[in-house]
Image 1 (cartoon, rainbow, N blue to C red):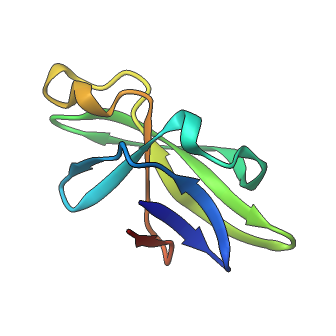
Image 2: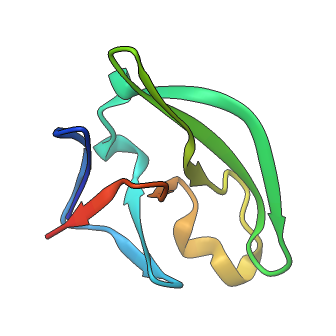
Image 3: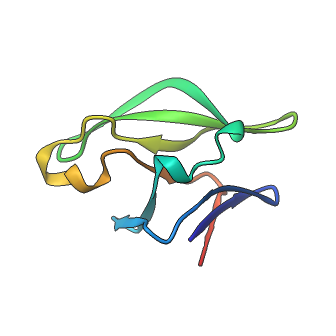
Length: 93
């Protein structure tokens, strides 16, 4: 699987985890040059607290376009150290 935005591969892995129609990519599969830590968080009753990343390619910023659960609840433990995408980021096989 690949996560792509503006023609750049943000992450690529054959070991994604599919959960709630999202593909979660292992952290080590990220092209970190495109990621900036966001201060945004959100809470899910069964997954826990999500932290976000902005995606930057040149001057273009896609705010809070990726998220992860650093300490997921037990029900979502399989996505610890995995990142998912939205906001126009394309996921392709």
